[in-house]
Image (spheres, rainbow, N blue to C red):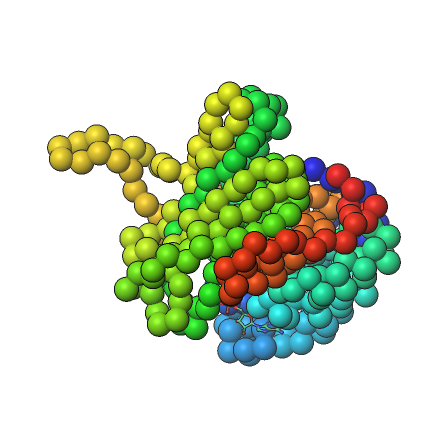
Length: 352
Ligand SMILES: NC(=O)c1ccc[n+]([C@@H]2O[C@H](COP(=O)([O-])OP(=O)(O)OC[C@H]3O[C@@H](n4cnc5c(N)ncnc54)[C@H](O)[C@@H]3O)[C@@H](O)[C@H]2O)c1
Ligand SMILES: O[C@H]1[C@H](O)[C@@H](O)[C@H](O)[C@@H](O)[C@H]1O
């Protein structure tokens, strides 16, 4: 984790007391974060749950002592028991929630994406700069996964020399209804965009997308699998096989090819077994299971940093850069061309 910033606290919320968190959006991820804050991590409690779907929050809040349900995010942020916000609503709702949190100077953990496009991400970046200090940790949870952390530390130490290439695999068993080609970039490849920038400590300068003949298991119109190629500003090349209807489970791996060695994570997790007629390990069914510990660590680190009056982890800059690469990726996907990524100059608040 890099770039820790000392910050002030907006609501007299004492940096060292228990954090009262408003969880905004209580669908798949939000409900899981509510459980996590309640049952798994320390130093925080769920003070409010917010959803435009009143049925979800009534039920959730009833099971948590001292938790108030709201359908309006700003009403929850004005609750005196709330001094931090976890945003897990859909991406298009993030900008409004972030700006409302900034208006109250509340610390935020915002699920990826920061916002769905670079223009809205820039508005968030500008608003945070006006505060004069960082307020947001973006939910790129792979940065908290034990395997990715080990790989990062090896690359930072230069254990195998300079990294030249990354080979990524990202496979989901299937896709929810309505999953589109653009979502393959915005929802799925966004994780490889973030780990590429983080592991290599370089911006992504250009994107290309190859679309092989699709699997018969993909819904009509979805080009699945796809091969996505990034070029970094330093000339490294990164490939990602994205296969979101692979049918057999959830698999994420990353191999770094360096000048004097390679390092690969993600092929095996858990116990690796040899027995009669069988060799191998198990495959997790989905991202919730594969990254469970990473989600726990991500939220615990956010709570701990916030209670210290600090902000750490992926920043609004990382969210903005990811949105810019996604935009280029969607154009590359549609045109088959090499598309360059447009980034503004990195503002001082987000200096490494
Ligand atoms: N880090 C990861 O691995 C990961 C995985 C899945 C989803 N996500 C992200 O988490 C977020 C939520 O995804 P999800 O899969 O839980 O979605 P979901 O559809 O299951 O849940 C979203 C919830 O937000 C509610 N909602 C919609 N608009 C709202 C608003 N304006 N204010 C408050 N609530 C609102 C919906 O009623 C729903 O209950 C998205 O940003 C998504 O990209 C991250
Ligand atoms: O929204 C989800 C989520 O971000 C997962 O981590 C990713 O593996 C999926 O492909 C994506 O659809």
